[in-house]
Structures are given as structure tokens and as C-alpha cells.
Length: 282
Image 1 (cartoon, rainbow, N blue to C red):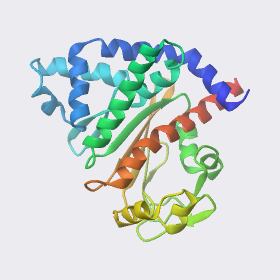
Image 2 (tube, helix red, strand yellow):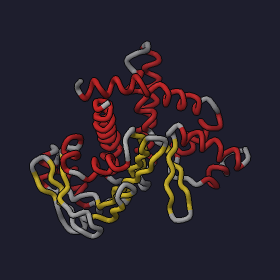
Image 3 (cartoon, one colour):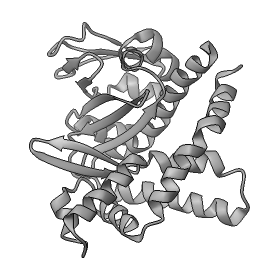
Image 4 (spheres, one colour):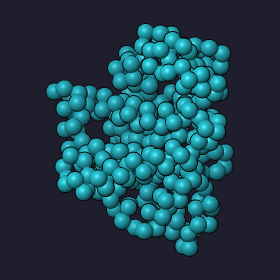
């Protein structure tokens, strides 16, 4: 069975359960209001969200828990503060799963929701982290291997990292036949099976040429500071909750706009690679 067909079959088998959770979560007007608030300004604390809603703090916490269980909200700790982020992954999954199976009006509703969500998040979050959470039916060890082992990264990402993965060690990106390195392009954190972090790479002329990035965009990207990509892994009920946090963007960041589109597609390929290989083994 080909990887694409296996992925489609996998979504047929397990997709509807998560869809049910998403639809139930969206059925409550208070939860929809919470999503609206996060869509307007992502990365809010519980206290900030409570200030906008005329309901008890405990009720807001329960609504957020439902949204998090449906993967519509993901959380990131910043010191002692717990920040809440709107997560686009379930909307992307629903659009991909159902868009070809309903009449034009319903298809358009899903398409409009997905487009509005992605557009608003891009407009509103120039100075905020990009946070995206997906659940993968695999083990932390295997997901970790997929993030660090060139034999895996070349399959779904088309690149490999050359490094010893020790914090502070330089990283060389090998992508599309070119090597990308430079000052500050290093491993920041390496806690096996739990957390990986590194500085996001320099945009070299060779990289820009290999990816058809025009000269004007390339110059904008080269003027931006290096950002940080962090991967957090957490085992949850036989799956791995993988959260990607891409941070360190300045106002009007060109790279922020580009990774907004790139990460969801890349993580979908990673998820399909790991889950279909498990399915095939069974």
C-alpha cells in the first residue's frame, strides 16, 4: 500500500473520533467566544481570557480544557504563566477529510473557516510565537528519531542536519543539494524524547536559489534575526502530543509569514510517515 493511500485509510479509521470532539467543542457559544479571543490575540493567560467573559473563572478553565482535549487550543508555559494558543491543526484536518464529500455550500463553509483562521493568525501574530500541536500515533522514541535522524528527515522534509546534537554545537543544514551554516546556528536544547530546540537557519543565497526565493524576499529574510524552533513531545493515551513552537520574530517578519504555511504541511507529512509505517507493520 502506498504511503498516500495508507494515510487516507488511516484517516478513515480514526479521523471521525477526533472530528466528533471538535464539533462538540465548537457547539458551545462560550467556547467559540474563547476561540475568537485567541484568534484576535494569541498567547493569552487564563486571567486575560476571564476578563473578557462574564462567567466564572472555573467555568472558563473547564471550557479551555474541552478545547484543549479537542486540540483546538494548545498551551505553552512561559515561566510561571500558562499561555493559550489557538491551534489550526483540527481545522486543517477537517477541511482535508471532508472537503470533497459534501455539497458546495458546506465545502465553502469549511474553506472559509480555514482561510479566515490562517489569514487572521498571520495578520495578528507578527510579534507572537507560532505554536502548532498535532497528535501522532507513535512512541516518543520514534518521533524523536524522526526529528533528529537524517534517514527520517530526508524522507518527509527533504533535508538533513549535520551536528552532534550537543547544546551549543553548530548545525549545518543540508537542503536541496546545498549546505547552510553560519554564526549562531546551533543546538539550544537536547533532552531526548522530551524537548529539542535549535536556532532557525541562515538564509543563504544558495538556499534562496534552490527554493526559488526572489532577491527582494531573500534580502528581507537575511536582515531578520535568527529565530528558534522548539519541539516538545509528551506521551498521551498511546499517542505523542507534538508541539512545535517557533519564536523570536520581529515586527512584520517575512519568515513568520512563510513558516505559518510551511509547518502544517511538514507536520502532516511527518504524521503520515510515522502512522502509515506503524499501520503497515500491523
